[in-house]
Length: 188
Image: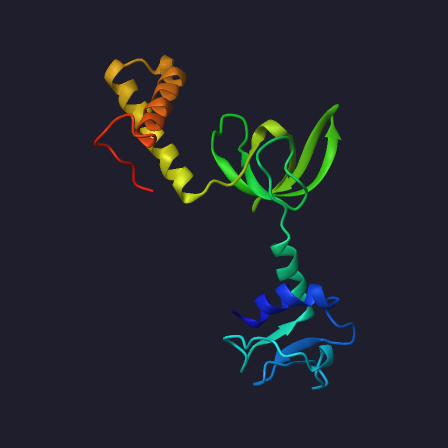
């Protein structure tokens, strides 16, 4: 564990960052000391961190790490909470999703919306355009569903049925996952 991780974990229990301190370091005994080289928190001994010899943490680094550890989670229902990192669907005619951070909530043209920021822009849209960030396993599963859907479209030569083919592909994957189709296993 690094010093920054230890501080983000332990300092909130001890009243937070000391007000008269610019930086915090760790001694070889596991005690924390501040800018004036005095021991903090009554000389309490902490587990030594892997970077105890040269680890220095500033207040800004600590506050940033603390905020990141308290990032709100979102299950995909309704608007994502302020501070949440999630995915937002692109502009009209763009079916791609982009990583964004929710900055605020607002009402736009009578609809509850989220103000979000991507690496390119700040914009606003309603809940239906957001989704949680997928895990690697979820991305692989979706890729497999897309591949099966493309194969069915190729076989039948009818792209108009893509939505029903996608549903069929999802059912096939579900059947494989619950072992209803013996002899086939999916990689995680």
